[in-house]
Length: 350
Ligand code: AMP
Ligand code: MG
Image (cartoon, rainbow, N blue to C red; front, side):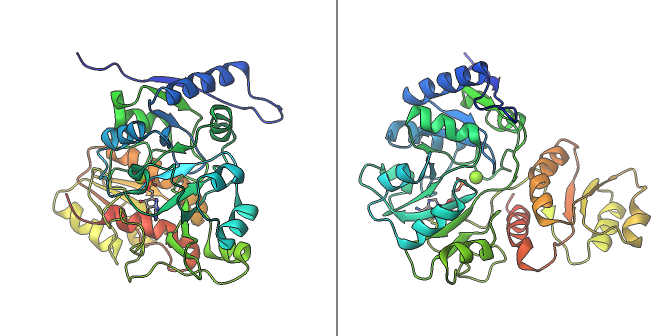
């Protein structure tokens, strides 16, 4: 018997209200019951949708890896309601973690710290450290606080696919592998959190994300290092699971140095092409009338670009195109996270 499709429950918290509507709290109570029973729930956060399970329940955590088809070597981020919960999951609380969490939580930054014994090995891929984050999404935080359960939650998609920024994306990727999806609308940031290793001096960014290095340096009150390695996205040495190929759309994506020439060549060879355009120059305009070309103008601001990136890739994947081409983003630091995700999405492998 095929398993039934998941239930999708809308949750919201209209601005100006002290508490969410009763129906939202009822949905959060149901989600908490599923989590307490060792089940999986897809939860909106301000970065992307997470596939959540009780981080202290090894069997539940293994369910996440099975549902995603995620290699056991790729550790999970544990989501907490506040700094006190985070500290209870760490065997030692480094000064850098203290400063970052005091000024940037709740928010899209994950700290890597020495793990407490209570955390199952499955969560940390057997490693001695754990990645912790307090999400800014008020409903995600309310779910964690009410259930009292720290939530292990990677992005709610099949491994290596594009992360979900809507409940619909979760449904498309995971289908009946998840039983309950909380629909909180589109994610505000649209890409995964900045991950920073607080067990080294100076603290080191393992994955660029919505919070820039300058934000982290201001919080730490000192320097913060970029990932070691020369890859555009950096190959996080202490993130065993971070491989170059990740976040891949089904349609192969390229980041050519001369996108207009590449698109013209692909069209001439009979391909149907989707083009994420940053600057519509003359050559881009001259191709824009082609029947076989879908042109998507992308925002010139990196945060706005990040917010739209995954939704754009999901939408283009529905168009039966042969190839996606993206204009390379500017090289300045503000674009680092977008460049990281685009270059991983463009990594050939299929
Ligand atoms: P995802 O949940 O798919 O966004 O991926 C979580 C990412 O967080 C991993 O791929 C690692 O890059 C990072 N991460 C999680 N736990 C650790 C850890 N203990 N040490 C270093 N990096 C980690
Ligand atoms: Mg992911």
